[in-house]
Image (cartoon, rainbow, N blue to C red):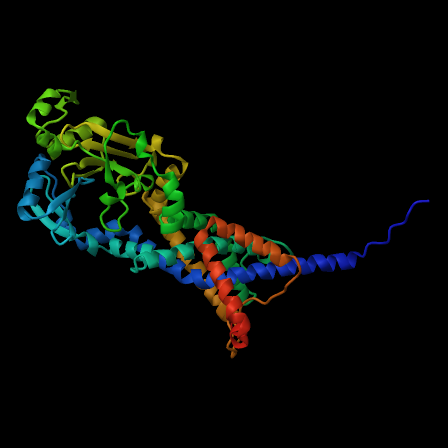
Length: 491
């Protein structure tokens, strides 16, 4: 005789499923809300400073037109002659960089470092060698916006705060996408729709959710590419493990300084995956002279048609001729800053020299022999290095005018997402009560564990977010949960 199973109570099962779903939704909403409290001011700041940096060239030209604009002529004077004009005007300064003009109606630039440590662009008319004017590199709108964008003008502490915001921003995106995707009739009603006649709160919710959802992957790209510059996630983890290994250069002496030492201020001029890589060195000319002229005369090896151990430093004209032979067109030339320094030809998307990351190239040349000590191209980049080379060009709007226009739209959209989130909270906040107005708790056994595991996994991937969440939970347990007024105010 077969055993008869008792009937299943579908009503009870449905209620259980509904309760679990409701609890999961409100738990996610609470995490989204609290993450948003911290992230919104930073998202506004990053978007506004990003807009300024997008129009850096236009702003700079309007400020310094007389020092940048020249009338094209038939012949140009030698770069060494132009540099001599700069040295004559600033005899106690060190020339650190030469940047050829990108068009025939613009001046060449020489970057100099004064004894005070201040760095200036000295602009020179390439057709007659006349010094036209100077641009304080630390006084540009781009430099100010970039400093705020990266450190809030607070140094390392500002960098940490921005990294926390970007890390929590990833959690904000994950929770936001979950809230946006349709689950039931209520969420389906506003999915990819703008309900104009349902009141201001519904209208703002639809705009916030749909714009945020559709642009979530774009915003994630901006967060991740920005985090790669941050001190902890970027500098200690991702960049450190993605840096180009200097050991790949054969029989090349290495400096104690890394590539980031060539940056001027907070400007990122060097490819991301080379910043932490040690620089090569020119041969130690002073030590060889001290060893005696016999050793100098004994070694007669030649490289690129020049004496390997020439007593004479190569001039800028010779290096520029070599650059042409090597195939460089748009580039920056960093000059040696010591007796063992090197000439560095750099053409990369990171500093806006070029727009195609596949043409990235950084070449180091011995200042005495002209020997190519190291030559790093796109083909030597690892996967993360290639992502950053391509991603930063897109991030900064340097690929094309269309890229710049699209990025302006993204910045404005992110500003709206941040503001609309604050407006939604303002509309739904409890009026007349001294409470934060966080989404209510609908706890269901087991659901909080799923939420906790999700947050722990995300936090492990983003340590600054994990540390912040752990700190907040500890303060909540030690203080807020034990002080009834504080506990009520934050809910």
